[in-house]
Length: 499
Image: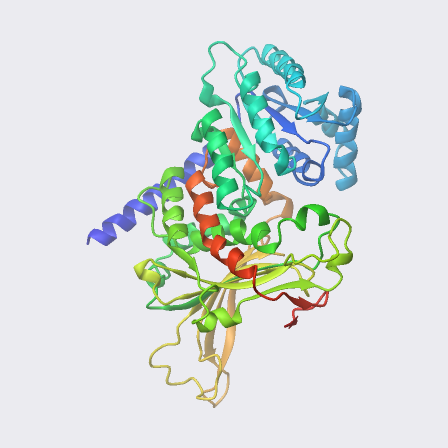
């Protein structure tokens, strides 16, 4: 009875939460973004298109919205607005040029050096001008779309210049700072960076970005589990054999060799995206469907993880692999004797009692056969699978797959009798794709969610400081273990690892 009451309360909370989000579909209060590195790849490929999509759909409106771009390149305001227009029209030539022009008028530009405090005074002046236009203090959001080596100095300059506090009566918590991954290189550097952030800003001001948490399918995992009672009772070690997460890309480092060579696949996507996906998949029901409730349960899951690959006694350890694609050392910016992995396969276990004995396989690689990202839940074979053939390798087990790339959706593999007189079984799929029944452009991009939720001040889709700490602690022993382990290779465009 108690479980049913708790389940009902949680479902009511989910419904209330979703209604609250949809009721804030359009932002009707002033917001000013300051984007550091606005002429870089991230801004060009993700941030500017995502801001446009939010504008085009009416989530943000011209009367309440402005962007101040900050970078080293020399532009006047009008030249930069033309730069924005060209990017959007190259992306989609069918756009209404008048609407694009109206959107571009929300942008101002300041050229300068991130490391020089004097340039921040110019940005403050721009912010004051926008507040005068809005006739009130706008919500200020600083977005760091720059290389991680600039983070600490930018943090200091933002704080000491009062960039996020430009009105006498403004509450300091109103300003927000968005930080891209990677957040540190190991436990120690992540802790130092967090210490610096914590000394300058309040935790509710800090939005650490892991855009995979903002992907539609990842967001839907909790709703799927808790809104469908046929699955949640099965979500434990009694019914699940293993969970597999794969994040593969069919391209290499694509001009990011100098950055990537100091990071590697495990730090680049394993420490953040993949561990967050696993935590979201196995976390317990939150006491309330809120940012605090969800982040607390994600943290519990992350704190329970331990890599088994550094334990040579386990059979999974023998199957752990780190590898590098052939030709990686010839990529621009990569050292000729690089030991950086571009692929890994590792196993993780959880100390949570409901997941005891369940195997979690985490895998990612660049220059693989195809681009795909999925979470696959392998259920145990029925204890009395009378009709499954004895020679069957699959054992008539069911699988549930959350598809994240290239197309977002959910599918379930089940078994049913073949037509005819035999009792043989065939596999079948129930599937759902987000694009079915709606136009693709109606599905928000992950970065649209990141920007929109930051404007609203909702931290649900952003890892907290303790989550970052827990993620590094999972992979730290493995990174140390790998220092003494050989590096395998594989051919570009192949999934076959050569040990």
